[in-house]
Length: 65
Image (cartoon, rainbow, N blue to C red; front, side, top):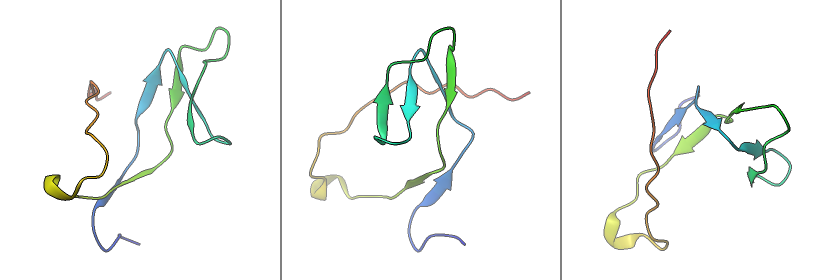
């Protein structure tokens, strides 16, 4: 079901870290595991004037196989 506002994204991977599904935050990667998948995420638009936390810039690389 589509959200009322925003969009769901999937298919993203982390390199050199992992997503701790229990703590719902980044965690140390497991030994000999370079990549980890992120869960489906909901991106919701927010007006920049109403943002309560500062923006966080992170590099994102798109690949298609």
